[in-house]
Each structure stands twice: as structure tokens, then as C-alpha cells.
Image (tube, rainbow, N blue to C red):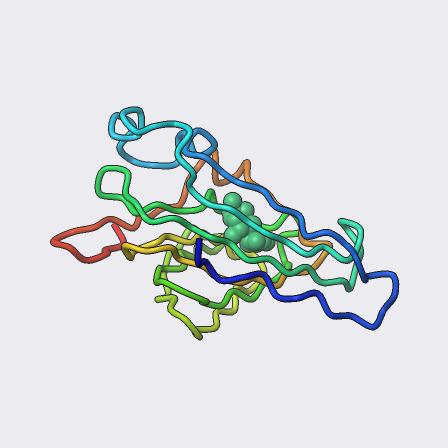
Length: 183
Ligand code: PAN
Ligand code: ZN
């Protein structure tokens, strides 16, 4: 397993030394309902690993002024013609912003503002993406290898998954003639 390693935690603040990195994983079953082709989804093994997130959360959730850091490892694949993607969310504190940057592999950052306008940015190793407050965000792996990206967000941002679970994004990233299209 040669995926990019989590940075070495190197802090002079004694309170941070030895803090654990939180690891979560999402299987296909955790992504039920987010893909357009529900039949293709049901035919896939529900225990298939979709993505993993390793996070360093040095502050208590909700602390104003603190920062969180995480790396997401998004595996390649498609559900029907739709690229494998993260659940996506607004921040619970909706005006909180976030940085994403590409580490390995390639994908698209899908963004949606409060008026449900959707646009996307190409993510590749070294690309930096600023997600303003009020903008929902989701990543899709458009390549055939592991897509890893890092994120930095405020410790008082929180996650609002319900809004996207109920209403989705107003556009999807589909493969058409071998290339990604926002539809
Ligand atoms: C990221 C995301 C991570 C997984 O750390 O939480 O990429 O995506 P979902 O949370 O949408 O499943 C982030 O945006 N934090 O705010
Ligand atoms: Zn976020």
C-alpha cells in the first residue's frame, strides 16, 4: 500500500504531542442515495471501500479560531457513469471556509453555492483550492488510481450532511465519451 503518508506530527506545544490521528472509512453502503444510477449502485458490493479520511483535530470540536487538518484517500471507480465521490456537505456554521489541495491522482472538486449554482475545479498534485464560506463541496475521483487530497478547515465549521443528503447537488460529474462532464 503506497498511498501518500500522513505528515509526521511535529509540534513544540507539549499539549499536542502524541495526539492521535482520527481515521474513518466510508464504504459504498455509507453512500446510499447519492448516485444517480441506483440500480448500478445496488449491483456493487456494499462493503467496497470508497474513501478513508485521516484527520488531526488538535482542538475540541467547535473551538473558535482553531484549525483542523485531514487527508482523504478516495478510491477510483464509477457507479454507472458517475465517478466515485465523497458525500459532500455544507459546513454547519455555513460561513466557514476551507482549503483543499491535491496530493496524488486526479479528480474534480464540485462546488455549489447557496443559490444551487454548481461549478467544478480540476484537482491534481500541487493544485490549491479555496472553498469560500457558504459553498457546499464534494470531491470526485476522475482517474483510475487512488486520488488523495489534503484539507484544512476551522474547528468550529462542523458538517451539515443533511442538506446534501436530502437535495443533492444540482449537477453531477458523469463520464461522457471517456471524459468528465458536469450534468
Ligand atoms: C473534508 C471531508 C472529507 C470527506 O475533510 O470531510 O473529504 O468528505 P465528506 O465529509 O463529504 O464525506 C472536509 O471537507 N472537511 O470539512
Ligand atoms: Zn468541509
